[in-house]
Image (cartoon, rainbow, N blue to C red; front, side):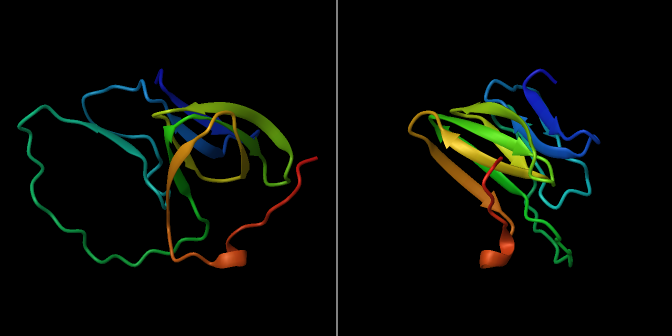
Length: 137
């Protein structure tokens, strides 16, 4: 997919999925494996299309890792990817309108321009137990 980038580590594990603002398709398209605790999809429907009213059933789920989704509302952001050993892998640039799902590994950010971001992740937040901060080598 031209405007969808999957960032992986050396063993092929998905660290992140970047959905570029230029992406277009028809209907509903999901980019995440079904087993991911956070799902990332794209929807396009023509005017007049209706989604039948529905409710989500209570389903007990066990979440082991926090996945997060960032919507770059404005600006430009560099994201740095690291493996589980905190070794730098690569960087990518996110622009206004891009969306990134962060799954495994580690990541850090530098604002290349003033930036507005919207973050969505699972809760409840576990405070200091939720993440390990480190200084990159």
